[in-house]
Image 1 (tube, helix red, strand yellow):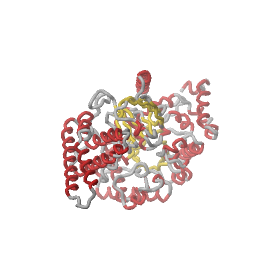
Image 2 (cartoon, one colour):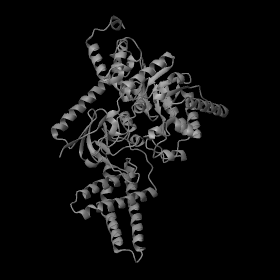
Image 3 (cartoon, helix red, strand yellow):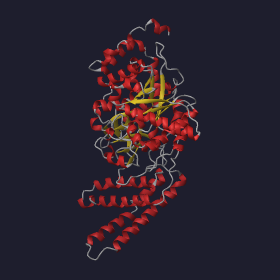
Image 4 (cartoon, one colour):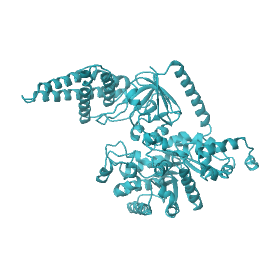
Length: 600
């Protein structure tokens, strides 16, 4: 039976494939693909865990006191029966062989299949046996966690994003996917993502866009309703998910896929064209990256530098162990060298809110379950609370500056005291490197404008910092009091809100007046609908995901910035700035270009 689900579109395009469900479990489960050489070792891990659990259950049953109720021994019999049932362990083995899932993922996938079968049973007693199954699986997962695990090395993506076990492409469905886990799937076979929760600018959505694959978040019951191996269409433009589509619908979306690929190929031809407006204004299009390897994609997309290197992803999925100075230095140097002399802006770690660490200090433990972690110990607040870690990162960034043009960016600055403490830490890091005889150069230090307080006191910050970068995702969140990761209020997250546009326009104008560089590195920079408006505000530096550069460049090449600037005030002060912007676009599209533009 075909049906539709609705969510929030966060990454454009169409994906078609078979559903792969990542089940929620009380035990954290690693999800990664293995290669052919690891299949037998994963099956062995499963078998060893099964034997270990069988031994535990047998011992428990043997050591039951005489006064224990008979039902308890019977319950352990049920668990042993489930443990040895081929429907559980045999089928799990097939997930490993056919799909090349690691053992934990294969077991959780089979649990998902069996749990749904139990849910559909009419007999209440049999339905309740699902709890026994979950307990057995949890024991198996814990046994594998205790045992020796295979080292994780992501398998290379097969051509055409095919499933290991067949010819069908795959789409990933989960209640939620942590940003760090998204990065593990970066070179995997998935052609699209669907999550039950999340907002348009949650970090999971941002990473999905960086992967340049269709994604829908906030689809509520998707992971509960969609079954393993269902055929799924993800409409990343409309936020629609179609499950088990009819042949006619499937063919229509396949046609749209082909059209999208043709459009992408056409836009890619612009990658070496300089970004210059119709009236001759040169515009800098930079890339946002998460890992050093992303720098290559940035160069290939035509970026003229990195406007935001999100270093927090180097700190994630490490089992609580933070990267040392040398490891960070190697990562930053790799990105700098890959950019071939073009500038790289490295942001200090922005941990907290929807990007937590596995390892937490005593301070962080108090905030881990705060009602609103976005207002807690995060970004520069966290770094200043961990001075040893912070100085390590600063030294690593400074050392990388010896290999190319590096700028240092500080997230979530809201107080002059934070600025002073940061600059003191930078000075101390330089002194330590000089004493150790390690090479570095002076780097420009900038601040993120993502808290309304920073925007309102920007002249003071501009006297301290060398440049500013406007992080529109958090600026919108904090200005409108909207949790951007909460799908229940996602409809209120509005980048077109007059208050938001006013703060952005004011920040750009004040930075330009002070003679300081200003860029926008939030999602607004990569959204073509905002390109003309940001140019009108005086912005000449945009930083976005590499996949968005060509689309924005096309808008830049078609825009007369002076004509838009002349009407900026009427747009920003309008009750509906988005409609005012669309109306001006229609008006200028039919108006003759001025002589200056024609001769430019």
